[in-house]
Image (tube, rainbow over all chains, first blue to last red; front, side, top):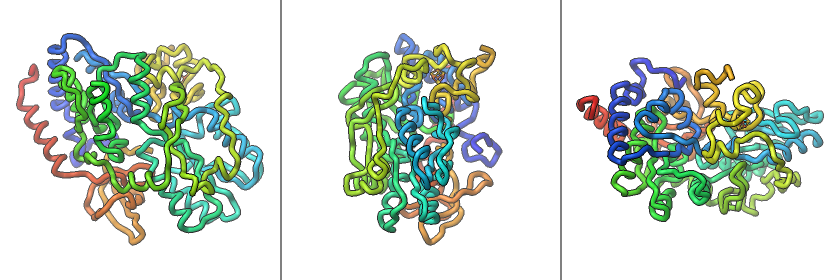
Length: 379
Length: 76
Ligand code: SF4
């Protein structure tokens, strides 16, 4: 549906060739004044998609801006031992119904992928579009234990915990959450602190920002002196964001610009934030490829422990299971290498036979690169 | 999962849900995370939940900026 650009389309203005050309011209002239090319990280996988789908990456490179993909794909950064824990459960316990988003089911692990493992009789895996579908299945199937296996950033977290709150209110005894909930700002700080790559600024994820607002990124400008802009997902949106970052670099005036004001309020979404605050607490979480990041994960508060699948089913999360794999998703997620620099990219690892989550998720940098770059399939 | 484009609210049910139209295809969305949603509003829907309402005034402001850009010569 996102492809339509009919006359009636309300997005046509944001895809207008003239506007895009003017914005690219303005960016190029800023970079010229800066004097050397810059690297800007787009944190969100949906931004990566826009950049590729509309062919903006090479045009930006001509203008002197190299876009680096960041860790903005929740499926990609969820460590594989989460999948292995849930695979262990459904291959050993009856009457479990695991609901999850589609791309989660294809992530390969040493125990297989959710979509290929064979659950024991009475248990199964179901793809849902919304966590509410999972809640509804729990209501309708009292004889089953329904688990929502949810990976998400701030954008998705309110929707997920909403279902737990409902289940709590309704006294449902057969609904629980296996949470893989991650926070973007701590990950940004980890990337900045790792100093592995010289990023001159950030394009902040538009829809994470609808929830957390502008202030959540203040530390990037204030503590680290790095520019950034919140941007939307149309070509002109993302270019407006990049132009703002380029201007901030030139003027040496880092700030948190909001170039997506039609959707992102400065304060974010207070209702969603209140719900998160009420139900969840932070913990030091492990991100695939990035390791432990302080206070970067969210889990249900102890009062809701009955709705926590880890607690209810005694799931074992075994970080020590991580072994060295040839998949370089970790380096891709940190922006250290481009997908095509992974030796497996293309012939060995592709959408039909993914070797890592970055080739699985629609927001994964490797899949996006594979789909939109010409020539790679011949590799 | 993430519909990057906004859809238009076409109906509201009593239970906090409603229908959102995406250029002809309709989906059911939960409006519990937003206040004062009306039929005709544009919203961003994510994983079945409306998470933000489009601010038409801000949208028009950006469009005005585009119009000004278009008046500039390509080299600027
Ligand atoms: S191309 Fe495949 S193996 Fe290489 S980093 Fe990406 S997902 Fe991993």
